[in-house]
Image 1: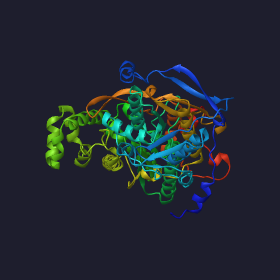
Image 2: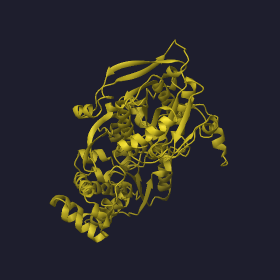
Image 3: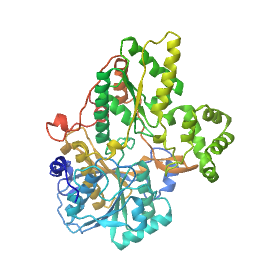
Image 4: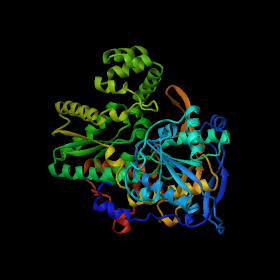
Amino acid sequence: MTKKSALQKARAAYQPKLPSALWGAVKAVEGEPTQSVADQEEIKKLFPNTYGLPELTFEKSAKTGKALPINVGVILSGGQAPGGHNVISGLFDGVKAINKDSRLFGFLMGPGGLVDHNYMELTAEIIDQYRNTGGFDIIGSGRTKLEEPEQFEKGLEILKELNIKALVIIGGDDSNTNACVLAEYYKAKNAGVQVIGCPKTIDGDLKNGLIETSFGFDTATKVYSEVIGNIQRDCNSAKKYWHFIKLMGRSASHIALECALQTQPNYCVISEEVEAKKLTLNDIVADIAAVVAKRAANGNNFGTVLIPEGLIEFIPAMKALIAELNDLLARSPEFATLDAEAQRAYVIANLSAENAATFESLPVGVARQLSLDRDPHGNVQVSLIETEKLLSEMVGKKLKAMKEAGEYVGKFSALHHFFGYEGRCADPSNFDADYCYALGYNAAQLINCGATGYMSSIRNLTKPSVQWIAGGIPITMMMNMERRNGKMKPVIQKALVDLNGAPFQKFAQHRAEWAENTCYVYPGPIQYFGPAEVCDQPSRTLYYEQGGK
Protein backbone atom coordinates (compact mmCIF):
# COMPACT_ATOMS: atom_id res chain seq x y z
CA MET A 1 0.00 0.00 0.00
CA THR A 2 1.35 3.43 -0.97
CA LYS A 3 2.01 5.66 2.02
CA LYS A 4 -0.55 8.45 2.34
CA SER A 5 0.22 12.10 2.98
CA ALA A 6 -1.37 13.99 5.86
CA LEU A 7 -3.71 15.71 3.39
CA GLN A 8 -4.77 12.41 1.83
CA LYS A 9 -5.66 11.03 5.25
CA ALA A 10 -7.70 14.11 6.12
CA ARG A 11 -9.45 14.19 2.73
CA ALA A 12 -10.46 10.53 3.04
CA ALA A 13 -12.82 11.57 5.84
CA TYR A 14 -14.59 14.22 3.72
CA GLN A 15 -18.21 13.31 2.98
CA PRO A 16 -19.38 14.84 -0.31
CA LYS A 17 -22.77 16.51 -0.24
CA LEU A 18 -25.76 15.41 -2.32
CA PRO A 19 -28.76 17.32 -3.69
CA SER A 20 -31.72 16.79 -1.39
CA ALA A 21 -33.66 15.27 -4.31
CA LEU A 22 -31.32 12.25 -4.12
CA TRP A 23 -31.81 11.63 -0.41
CA GLY A 24 -33.73 8.37 -0.10
CA ALA A 25 -36.22 7.09 -2.68
CA VAL A 26 -36.61 9.13 -5.88
CA LYS A 27 -38.90 9.24 -8.88
CA ALA A 28 -38.15 10.39 -12.42
CA VAL A 29 -40.31 13.15 -13.85
CA GLU A 30 -40.34 13.39 -17.65
CA GLY A 31 -40.05 16.72 -19.43
CA GLU A 32 -40.66 17.53 -23.07
CA PRO A 33 -39.25 15.41 -25.92
CA THR A 34 -35.88 16.68 -27.15
CA GLN A 35 -34.08 17.08 -30.46
CA SER A 36 -30.43 17.34 -31.43
CA VAL A 37 -28.69 20.70 -31.32
CA ALA A 38 -28.25 20.58 -35.12
CA ASP A 39 -28.65 18.27 -38.13
CA GLN A 40 -31.90 16.89 -36.69
CA GLU A 41 -32.89 14.67 -39.61
CA GLU A 42 -29.47 13.05 -39.94
CA ILE A 43 -29.13 12.43 -36.19
CA LYS A 44 -32.68 11.06 -35.93
CA LYS A 45 -31.98 8.66 -38.79
CA LEU A 46 -28.77 7.42 -37.13
CA PHE A 47 -30.31 7.06 -33.66
CA PRO A 48 -33.91 5.93 -34.21
CA ASN A 49 -34.16 4.14 -30.84
CA THR A 50 -32.66 6.82 -28.59
CA TYR A 51 -33.59 10.07 -30.38
CA GLY A 52 -36.28 12.44 -29.08
CA LEU A 53 -36.29 11.12 -25.51
CA PRO A 54 -37.52 13.49 -22.78
CA GLU A 55 -35.42 15.29 -20.21
CA LEU A 56 -35.59 13.65 -16.77
CA THR A 57 -35.68 15.35 -13.37
CA PHE A 58 -35.53 13.48 -10.07
CA GLU A 59 -37.84 14.27 -7.17
CA LYS A 60 -38.35 12.67 -3.79
CA SER A 61 -40.66 9.65 -3.83
CA ALA A 62 -42.97 8.36 -1.12
CA LYS A 63 -42.45 4.81 -2.37
CA THR A 64 -39.84 2.81 -0.48
CA GLY A 65 -40.15 -0.55 -2.23
CA LYS A 66 -36.97 -2.61 -2.46
CA ALA A 67 -35.39 -2.88 -5.91
CA LEU A 68 -33.64 -5.98 -7.18
CA PRO A 69 -29.82 -6.01 -7.13
CA ILE A 70 -28.13 -4.92 -10.34
CA ASN A 71 -24.64 -5.39 -11.73
CA VAL A 72 -23.12 -2.24 -13.26
CA GLY A 73 -19.94 -1.65 -15.27
CA VAL A 74 -17.93 1.58 -15.35
CA ILE A 75 -15.30 2.95 -17.75
CA LEU A 76 -12.99 5.94 -17.41
CA SER A 77 -12.37 7.23 -20.93
CA GLY A 78 -9.99 9.83 -22.37
CA GLY A 79 -7.76 12.26 -20.53
CA GLN A 80 -7.79 12.47 -16.77
CA ALA A 81 -9.81 15.09 -14.87
CA PRO A 82 -10.00 15.74 -11.12
CA GLY A 83 -12.98 14.04 -9.52
CA GLY A 84 -13.23 10.83 -11.54
CA HIS A 85 -12.76 8.72 -8.43
CA ASN A 86 -15.65 10.50 -6.76
CA VAL A 87 -17.93 9.77 -9.72
CA ILE A 88 -17.13 6.08 -9.22
CA SER A 89 -17.57 6.41 -5.43
CA GLY A 90 -20.96 8.04 -5.92
CA LEU A 91 -21.97 5.38 -8.45
CA PHE A 92 -20.90 2.63 -6.03
CA ASP A 93 -22.83 4.14 -3.11
CA GLY A 94 -25.81 4.75 -5.42
CA VAL A 95 -26.10 1.15 -6.66
CA LYS A 96 -25.60 -0.14 -3.11
CA ALA A 97 -28.38 2.19 -1.92
CA ILE A 98 -30.68 0.64 -4.55
CA ASN A 99 -29.81 -2.82 -3.22
CA LYS A 100 -26.89 -3.77 -0.99
CA ASP A 101 -26.25 -6.85 -3.15
CA SER A 102 -25.65 -4.78 -6.30
CA ARG A 103 -22.13 -5.06 -7.73
CA LEU A 104 -19.86 -2.65 -9.59
CA PHE A 105 -17.22 -3.75 -12.12
CA GLY A 106 -14.53 -1.47 -13.50
CA PHE A 107 -13.14 -2.05 -17.00
CA LEU A 108 -9.40 -1.45 -17.04
CA MET A 109 -7.54 1.18 -19.06
CA GLY A 110 -10.56 2.70 -20.75
CA PRO A 111 -12.97 1.37 -23.41
CA GLY A 112 -10.29 -1.11 -24.49
CA GLY A 113 -10.92 -2.97 -21.23
CA LEU A 114 -14.49 -3.65 -22.30
CA VAL A 115 -13.45 -4.94 -25.71
CA ASP A 116 -10.57 -7.04 -24.34
CA HIS A 117 -12.50 -8.28 -21.28
CA ASN A 118 -10.09 -6.75 -18.75
CA TYR A 119 -11.94 -5.86 -15.56
CA MET A 120 -12.01 -5.96 -11.78
CA GLU A 121 -14.80 -5.88 -9.25
CA LEU A 122 -14.82 -2.66 -7.23
CA THR A 123 -15.51 -3.48 -3.60
CA ALA A 124 -16.04 -1.17 -0.63
CA GLU A 125 -12.46 -1.83 0.48
CA ILE A 126 -11.11 -0.65 -2.88
CA ILE A 127 -13.49 2.30 -3.24
CA ASP A 128 -12.65 3.64 0.22
CA GLN A 129 -8.97 3.95 -0.77
CA TYR A 130 -9.84 6.39 -3.57
CA ARG A 131 -12.55 8.68 -2.21
CA ASN A 132 -11.80 12.40 -2.76
CA THR A 133 -8.51 11.67 -4.52
CA GLY A 134 -7.27 12.87 -7.90
CA GLY A 135 -6.34 10.76 -10.87
CA PHE A 136 -7.93 7.85 -12.69
CA ASP A 137 -5.61 5.20 -11.25
CA ILE A 138 -8.39 3.16 -9.61
CA ILE A 139 -8.99 1.42 -12.98
CA GLY A 140 -6.95 3.50 -15.42
CA SER A 141 -8.12 5.27 -18.57
CA GLY A 142 -7.59 4.98 -22.32
CA ARG A 143 -8.59 6.49 -25.66
CA THR A 144 -9.86 3.44 -27.56
CA LYS A 145 -12.81 4.56 -29.69
CA LEU A 146 -15.93 2.41 -29.54
CA GLU A 147 -17.32 2.70 -33.06
CA GLU A 148 -17.26 -0.72 -34.72
CA PRO A 149 -19.96 -3.42 -34.34
CA GLU A 150 -17.23 -5.99 -33.65
CA GLN A 151 -16.21 -3.96 -30.58
CA PHE A 152 -19.81 -3.67 -29.40
CA GLU A 153 -20.28 -7.42 -29.72
CA LYS A 154 -17.04 -8.23 -27.90
CA GLY A 155 -18.16 -5.88 -25.11
CA LEU A 156 -21.57 -7.51 -25.00
CA GLU A 157 -19.95 -10.91 -24.44
CA ILE A 158 -18.34 -9.85 -21.15
CA LEU A 159 -21.37 -7.83 -20.08
CA LYS A 160 -23.54 -10.93 -20.43
CA GLU A 161 -20.95 -13.13 -18.71
CA LEU A 162 -20.89 -10.79 -15.67
CA ASN A 163 -24.67 -10.22 -15.86
CA ILE A 164 -24.03 -6.46 -16.18
CA LYS A 165 -27.25 -4.63 -17.01
CA ALA A 166 -25.87 -1.09 -17.22
CA LEU A 167 -22.63 0.54 -18.34
CA VAL A 168 -21.50 4.00 -17.20
CA ILE A 169 -18.96 5.78 -19.43
CA ILE A 170 -17.17 8.68 -17.76
CA GLY A 171 -15.61 10.90 -20.41
CA GLY A 172 -15.59 14.00 -22.59
CA ASP A 173 -17.46 14.81 -25.77
CA ASP A 174 -15.88 12.05 -27.88
CA SER A 175 -16.27 9.46 -25.11
CA ASN A 176 -19.91 10.37 -24.59
CA THR A 177 -20.41 10.24 -28.35
CA ASN A 178 -19.19 6.64 -28.04
CA ALA A 179 -21.69 6.13 -25.20
CA CYS A 180 -24.49 7.44 -27.41
CA VAL A 181 -23.55 5.10 -30.28
CA LEU A 182 -23.25 2.15 -27.91
CA ALA A 183 -26.63 2.88 -26.28
CA GLU A 184 -28.29 2.97 -29.70
CA TYR A 185 -26.65 -0.29 -30.78
CA TYR A 186 -27.65 -2.21 -27.63
CA LYS A 187 -31.16 -0.74 -27.69
CA ALA A 188 -31.63 -1.72 -31.35
CA LYS A 189 -30.54 -5.27 -30.50
CA ASN A 190 -32.71 -5.36 -27.38
CA ALA A 191 -29.55 -6.50 -25.58
CA GLY A 192 -30.83 -5.48 -22.16
CA VAL A 193 -27.85 -3.20 -21.40
CA GLN A 194 -28.37 0.44 -20.46
CA VAL A 195 -25.64 3.00 -21.22
CA ILE A 196 -25.22 6.20 -19.19
CA GLY A 197 -22.65 9.00 -19.70
CA CYS A 198 -21.00 11.39 -17.24
CA PRO A 199 -19.60 14.80 -18.42
CA LYS A 200 -15.84 14.94 -17.89
CA THR A 201 -13.23 17.31 -19.33
CA ILE A 202 -11.03 19.97 -17.82
CA ASP A 203 -11.39 21.88 -21.12
CA GLY A 204 -14.90 22.99 -20.10
CA ASP A 205 -16.32 22.51 -23.62
CA LEU A 206 -18.84 19.79 -22.75
CA LYS A 207 -21.80 21.80 -21.54
CA ASN A 208 -25.17 23.29 -22.42
CA GLY A 209 -28.19 24.63 -20.54
CA LEU A 210 -28.62 21.35 -18.66
CA ILE A 211 -24.95 20.40 -18.30
CA GLU A 212 -23.70 23.57 -16.62
CA THR A 213 -20.08 22.48 -16.42
CA SER A 214 -17.97 19.40 -16.99
CA PHE A 215 -16.26 17.97 -13.95
CA GLY A 216 -12.57 18.67 -13.41
CA PHE A 217 -12.71 22.16 -14.93
CA ASP A 218 -13.07 23.81 -11.51
CA THR A 219 -10.09 22.03 -9.96
CA ALA A 220 -7.77 22.22 -12.96
CA THR A 221 -8.29 25.95 -13.50
CA LYS A 222 -7.70 26.60 -9.80
CA VAL A 223 -4.42 24.67 -10.01
CA TYR A 224 -3.33 26.59 -13.10
CA SER A 225 -4.42 29.90 -11.59
CA GLU A 226 -2.36 29.23 -8.48
CA VAL A 227 0.77 28.69 -10.58
CA ILE A 228 0.01 31.69 -12.83
CA GLY A 229 -0.41 33.77 -9.68
CA ASN A 230 2.95 32.52 -8.41
CA ILE A 231 4.58 33.45 -11.72
CA GLN A 232 2.95 36.89 -11.64
CA ARG A 233 4.24 37.47 -8.11
CA ASP A 234 7.75 36.53 -9.31
CA CYS A 235 7.22 38.64 -12.44
CA ASN A 236 6.27 41.67 -10.35
CA SER A 237 9.26 41.06 -8.08
CA ALA A 238 12.00 40.68 -10.73
CA LYS A 239 10.37 43.15 -13.14
CA LYS A 240 12.36 41.93 -16.14
CA TYR A 241 10.54 39.07 -17.86
CA TRP A 242 7.50 38.57 -20.06
CA HIS A 243 6.01 35.15 -19.35
CA PHE A 244 4.18 33.45 -22.23
CA ILE A 245 1.95 30.79 -20.70
CA LYS A 246 0.16 28.19 -22.81
CA LEU A 247 -2.83 26.50 -21.21
CA MET A 248 -4.77 23.37 -22.15
CA GLY A 249 -7.86 23.87 -24.27
CA ARG A 250 -7.60 22.48 -27.81
CA SER A 251 -11.10 23.20 -29.03
CA ALA A 252 -12.17 26.10 -26.80
CA SER A 253 -10.63 28.82 -24.64
CA HIS A 254 -12.61 28.23 -21.44
CA ILE A 255 -9.49 27.42 -19.39
CA ALA A 256 -7.60 30.52 -20.56
CA LEU A 257 -10.64 32.74 -19.93
CA GLU A 258 -11.27 31.28 -16.47
CA CYS A 259 -7.61 31.69 -15.48
CA ALA A 260 -7.65 35.27 -16.77
CA LEU A 261 -10.71 36.03 -14.63
CA GLN A 262 -8.95 34.54 -11.61
CA THR A 263 -5.50 36.13 -12.05
CA GLN A 264 -5.93 39.30 -14.21
CA PRO A 265 -2.90 38.91 -16.53
CA ASN A 266 -1.68 41.63 -18.87
CA TYR A 267 -2.89 39.81 -21.96
CA CYS A 268 -5.02 36.77 -22.73
CA VAL A 269 -5.79 35.44 -26.20
CA ILE A 270 -9.31 34.08 -26.65
CA SER A 271 -9.33 31.84 -29.71
CA GLU A 272 -13.04 32.30 -30.41
CA GLU A 273 -12.53 36.08 -30.62
CA VAL A 274 -9.62 35.60 -33.00
CA GLU A 275 -11.86 33.57 -35.31
CA ALA A 276 -14.83 35.94 -35.02
CA LYS A 277 -12.68 38.95 -35.90
CA LYS A 278 -10.80 37.01 -38.61
CA LEU A 279 -7.46 37.96 -37.05
CA THR A 280 -4.18 36.78 -38.51
CA LEU A 281 -1.16 35.61 -36.57
CA ASN A 282 0.46 38.97 -37.34
CA ASP A 283 -2.58 40.81 -35.94
CA ILE A 284 -2.22 38.97 -32.61
CA VAL A 285 1.52 39.62 -32.52
CA ALA A 286 1.04 43.34 -33.22
CA ASP A 287 -1.55 43.60 -30.43
CA ILE A 288 0.71 41.92 -27.88
CA ALA A 289 3.67 44.06 -28.99
CA ALA A 290 1.56 47.20 -28.50
CA VAL A 291 0.82 46.15 -24.90
CA VAL A 292 4.50 45.42 -24.26
CA ALA A 293 5.47 48.83 -25.67
CA LYS A 294 2.83 50.66 -23.63
CA ARG A 295 3.95 49.01 -20.40
CA ALA A 296 7.59 49.70 -21.25
CA ALA A 297 6.75 53.39 -21.70
CA ASN A 298 5.57 53.31 -18.08
CA GLY A 299 8.78 51.63 -16.97
CA ASN A 300 7.29 48.13 -16.77
CA ASN A 301 9.37 45.72 -18.85
CA PHE A 302 7.51 42.66 -17.58
CA GLY A 303 4.14 40.97 -17.92
CA THR A 304 2.14 37.81 -18.50
CA VAL A 305 0.40 36.49 -21.61
CA LEU A 306 -2.06 33.56 -21.51
CA ILE A 307 -2.49 31.47 -24.67
CA PRO A 308 -4.96 28.60 -25.26
CA GLU A 309 -3.24 25.60 -26.82
CA GLY A 310 -5.78 25.42 -29.66
CA LEU A 311 -5.17 28.97 -30.88
CA ILE A 312 -3.61 27.88 -34.17
CA GLU A 313 -6.82 26.10 -35.21
CA PHE A 314 -8.90 29.27 -34.74
CA ILE A 315 -6.86 31.57 -36.96
CA PRO A 316 -8.97 31.49 -40.17
CA ALA A 317 -6.10 30.86 -42.59
CA MET A 318 -4.66 28.18 -40.29
CA LYS A 319 -8.09 26.60 -39.75
CA ALA A 320 -8.57 26.21 -43.49
CA LEU A 321 -5.07 24.76 -43.83
CA ILE A 322 -5.59 22.24 -41.01
CA ALA A 323 -8.98 21.13 -42.35
CA GLU A 324 -7.49 20.35 -45.75
CA LEU A 325 -4.44 18.76 -44.14
CA ASN A 326 -6.66 16.47 -42.07
CA ASP A 327 -8.47 15.26 -45.18
CA LEU A 328 -5.24 14.89 -47.15
CA LEU A 329 -3.48 12.83 -44.49
CA ALA A 330 -6.59 10.71 -43.82
CA ARG A 331 -6.52 9.48 -47.42
CA SER A 332 -2.70 9.28 -47.76
CA PRO A 333 -1.34 6.26 -45.81
CA GLU A 334 1.91 6.48 -47.77
CA PHE A 335 2.66 9.85 -46.10
CA ALA A 336 3.97 8.16 -42.94
CA THR A 337 6.64 6.28 -44.94
CA LEU A 338 8.30 9.48 -46.24
CA ASP A 339 11.16 11.36 -44.60
CA ALA A 340 10.61 14.89 -43.23
CA GLU A 341 11.77 16.70 -46.37
CA ALA A 342 9.66 14.50 -48.64
CA GLN A 343 6.64 14.93 -46.38
CA ARG A 344 6.91 18.70 -46.64
CA ALA A 345 7.15 18.54 -50.43
CA TYR A 346 4.21 16.10 -50.57
CA VAL A 347 1.98 18.41 -48.51
CA ILE A 348 2.82 21.50 -50.57
CA ALA A 349 2.23 19.63 -53.82
CA ASN A 350 -1.16 18.27 -52.78
CA LEU A 351 -2.75 21.27 -51.06
CA SER A 352 -4.77 24.00 -52.73
CA ALA A 353 -2.65 26.97 -53.78
CA GLU A 354 -3.89 29.20 -50.94
CA ASN A 355 -3.32 26.61 -48.22
CA ALA A 356 0.02 25.58 -49.69
CA ALA A 357 1.13 29.21 -49.51
CA THR A 358 0.09 29.41 -45.84
CA PHE A 359 1.93 26.16 -45.09
CA GLU A 360 5.11 27.41 -46.80
CA SER A 361 4.97 30.71 -44.90
CA LEU A 362 5.16 29.02 -41.51
CA PRO A 363 8.40 28.36 -39.63
CA VAL A 364 9.58 24.90 -40.69
CA GLY A 365 9.20 23.54 -37.15
CA VAL A 366 5.58 24.67 -36.85
CA ALA A 367 4.70 23.38 -40.33
CA ARG A 368 6.28 20.06 -39.39
CA GLN A 369 4.21 19.85 -36.21
CA LEU A 370 1.02 20.46 -38.18
CA SER A 371 1.71 17.41 -40.35
CA LEU A 372 2.67 15.02 -37.56
CA ASP A 373 0.51 12.07 -36.44
CA ARG A 374 -3.10 12.84 -35.57
CA ASP A 375 -4.76 11.87 -32.30
CA PRO A 376 -7.24 8.93 -32.24
CA HIS A 377 -10.00 11.29 -33.39
CA GLY A 378 -8.08 12.52 -36.44
CA ASN A 379 -7.22 15.92 -34.94
CA VAL A 380 -3.94 17.83 -35.07
CA GLN A 381 -2.12 17.32 -31.77
CA VAL A 382 -1.97 21.03 -31.06
CA SER A 383 -0.39 20.54 -27.63
CA LEU A 384 2.80 19.62 -29.54
CA ILE A 385 2.85 23.00 -31.28
CA GLU A 386 4.86 25.43 -29.17
CA THR A 387 2.56 28.38 -29.77
CA GLU A 388 3.93 30.24 -26.77
CA LYS A 389 7.44 30.24 -28.27
CA LEU A 390 6.18 31.08 -31.73
CA LEU A 391 4.32 34.13 -30.43
CA SER A 392 7.14 35.38 -28.20
CA GLU A 393 9.65 35.08 -31.05
CA MET A 394 7.37 36.98 -33.41
CA VAL A 395 6.69 39.63 -30.74
CA GLY A 396 10.43 40.00 -30.23
CA LYS A 397 10.97 40.62 -33.95
CA LYS A 398 8.07 43.06 -34.05
CA LEU A 399 9.47 45.01 -31.08
CA LYS A 400 12.89 45.15 -32.73
CA ALA A 401 11.30 46.75 -35.81
CA MET A 402 9.32 49.13 -33.59
CA LYS A 403 12.48 50.14 -31.75
CA GLU A 404 14.25 50.90 -35.04
CA ALA A 405 11.24 53.04 -35.98
CA GLY A 406 11.39 54.86 -32.65
CA GLU A 407 8.05 53.36 -31.51
CA TYR A 408 9.37 51.32 -28.61
CA VAL A 409 11.83 52.01 -25.82
CA GLY A 410 12.40 49.11 -23.47
CA LYS A 411 13.79 45.65 -22.94
CA PHE A 412 12.02 42.44 -23.88
CA SER A 413 13.01 39.08 -22.43
CA ALA A 414 10.61 36.15 -22.65
CA LEU A 415 10.14 32.95 -20.66
CA HIS A 416 7.82 30.11 -21.65
CA HIS A 417 5.49 27.73 -19.82
CA PHE A 418 2.88 25.11 -20.68
CA PHE A 419 0.44 24.13 -17.96
CA GLY A 420 -1.51 21.01 -18.77
CA TYR A 421 -0.79 17.74 -17.04
CA GLU A 422 -0.17 19.57 -13.78
CA GLY A 423 -3.91 20.08 -13.32
CA ARG A 424 -5.46 16.89 -14.67
CA CYS A 425 -4.99 14.67 -11.62
CA ALA A 426 -5.08 17.15 -8.74
CA ASP A 427 -7.12 16.28 -5.66
CA PRO A 428 -10.59 17.62 -6.50
CA SER A 429 -11.73 20.90 -5.00
CA ASN A 430 -14.69 20.72 -2.64
CA PHE A 431 -16.87 21.80 -5.55
CA ASP A 432 -15.64 19.01 -7.82
CA ALA A 433 -15.67 16.46 -4.99
CA ASP A 434 -19.36 17.21 -4.34
CA TYR A 435 -20.32 17.60 -8.01
CA CYS A 436 -18.62 14.38 -9.10
CA TYR A 437 -20.05 12.33 -6.26
CA ALA A 438 -23.52 13.65 -7.13
CA LEU A 439 -23.00 12.83 -10.85
CA GLY A 440 -22.13 9.22 -9.97
CA TYR A 441 -24.95 8.77 -7.45
CA ASN A 442 -27.34 10.35 -9.95
CA ALA A 443 -26.15 7.93 -12.67
CA ALA A 444 -27.23 5.07 -10.40
CA GLN A 445 -30.71 6.59 -10.23
CA LEU A 446 -30.84 6.90 -14.03
CA ILE A 447 -30.02 3.19 -14.21
CA ASN A 448 -32.68 2.41 -11.60
CA CYS A 449 -35.39 4.19 -13.61
CA GLY A 450 -34.47 2.27 -16.78
CA ALA A 451 -32.87 5.12 -18.75
CA THR A 452 -30.38 4.51 -21.54
CA GLY A 453 -28.58 6.93 -23.85
CA TYR A 454 -28.70 9.59 -21.12
CA MET A 455 -26.04 11.82 -19.58
CA SER A 456 -26.06 12.39 -15.84
CA SER A 457 -27.02 16.02 -15.18
CA ILE A 458 -26.66 18.05 -11.97
CA ARG A 459 -27.76 21.71 -12.25
CA ASN A 460 -28.21 24.90 -10.21
CA LEU A 461 -24.55 24.57 -9.29
CA THR A 462 -23.94 28.04 -7.83
CA LYS A 463 -26.49 27.32 -5.10
CA PRO A 464 -25.77 25.21 -1.99
CA SER A 465 -25.51 21.54 -2.96
CA VAL A 466 -28.82 20.64 -1.27
CA GLN A 467 -30.54 22.87 -3.86
CA TRP A 468 -28.86 21.25 -6.87
CA ILE A 469 -31.26 19.78 -9.45
CA ALA A 470 -30.63 16.13 -10.38
CA GLY A 471 -31.72 14.33 -13.53
CA GLY A 472 -30.58 13.36 -17.01
CA ILE A 473 -30.59 14.53 -20.61
CA PRO A 474 -30.58 12.40 -23.78
CA ILE A 475 -27.10 12.43 -25.27
CA THR A 476 -28.61 12.75 -28.75
CA MET A 477 -29.75 16.22 -27.67
CA MET A 478 -26.09 17.36 -27.81
CA MET A 479 -25.21 15.79 -31.17
CA ASN A 480 -24.45 17.23 -34.58
CA MET A 481 -22.60 16.11 -37.72
CA GLU A 482 -18.90 16.94 -38.13
CA ARG A 483 -16.09 15.90 -40.43
CA ARG A 484 -13.71 13.44 -38.78
CA ASN A 485 -10.90 11.64 -40.59
CA GLY A 486 -12.35 12.82 -43.88
CA LYS A 487 -15.90 11.55 -43.18
CA MET A 488 -19.06 13.11 -41.76
CA LYS A 489 -19.82 11.57 -38.36
CA PRO A 490 -22.27 12.20 -35.51
CA VAL A 491 -20.48 13.77 -32.53
CA ILE A 492 -21.36 15.86 -29.52
CA GLN A 493 -21.10 19.55 -30.41
CA LYS A 494 -18.37 21.32 -28.47
CA ALA A 495 -19.37 24.38 -26.44
CA LEU A 496 -17.12 27.31 -27.36
CA VAL A 497 -16.62 30.52 -25.42
CA ASP A 498 -19.68 32.70 -25.98
CA LEU A 499 -18.41 36.16 -26.89
CA ASN A 500 -21.77 37.58 -25.81
CA GLY A 501 -21.76 35.63 -22.57
CA ALA A 502 -21.19 37.14 -19.15
CA PRO A 503 -17.72 35.60 -18.48
CA PHE A 504 -16.19 36.97 -21.69
CA GLN A 505 -17.95 40.32 -21.27
CA LYS A 506 -16.53 40.63 -17.74
CA PHE A 507 -13.05 39.92 -19.14
CA ALA A 508 -13.50 42.36 -22.05
CA GLN A 509 -14.65 45.07 -19.65
CA HIS A 510 -11.38 44.98 -17.69
CA ARG A 511 -8.65 43.78 -20.06
CA ALA A 512 -7.48 47.25 -21.15
CA GLU A 513 -6.83 48.18 -17.53
CA TRP A 514 -5.08 44.86 -16.85
CA ALA A 515 -2.91 45.36 -19.95
CA GLU A 516 -1.55 48.77 -18.99
CA ASN A 517 -1.42 48.40 -15.24
CA THR A 518 -0.21 45.65 -12.93
CA CYS A 519 -3.49 44.33 -11.49
CA TYR A 520 -2.39 40.80 -10.68
CA VAL A 521 -4.45 38.58 -8.38
CA TYR A 522 -2.73 35.75 -6.52
CA PRO A 523 -5.37 33.02 -5.89
CA GLY A 524 -3.08 30.73 -3.89
CA PRO A 525 -3.53 26.96 -3.55
CA ILE A 526 -6.86 25.15 -3.41
CA GLN A 527 -8.24 25.20 0.14
CA TYR A 528 -10.09 22.16 1.44
CA PHE A 529 -10.71 23.21 5.03
CA GLY A 530 -12.07 26.53 6.24
CA PRO A 531 -14.92 28.95 5.56
CA ALA A 532 -17.21 28.25 2.60
CA GLU A 533 -16.29 31.52 0.86
CA VAL A 534 -12.72 30.20 0.63
CA CYS A 535 -13.31 26.48 0.09
CA ASP A 536 -16.59 25.96 -1.75
CA GLN A 537 -16.66 28.62 -4.45
CA PRO A 538 -17.42 27.53 -8.03
CA SER A 539 -15.40 28.74 -11.01
CA ARG A 540 -15.66 32.40 -12.05
CA THR A 541 -17.10 31.21 -15.36
CA LEU A 542 -19.97 29.39 -13.67
CA TYR A 543 -20.50 32.25 -11.23
CA TYR A 544 -20.89 34.85 -14.00
CA GLU A 545 -22.95 32.54 -16.22
CA GLN A 546 -25.40 32.09 -13.36
CA GLY A 547 -25.86 35.83 -12.86
CA GLY A 548 -23.05 36.70 -10.43
CA LYS A 549 -21.78 40.29 -10.50
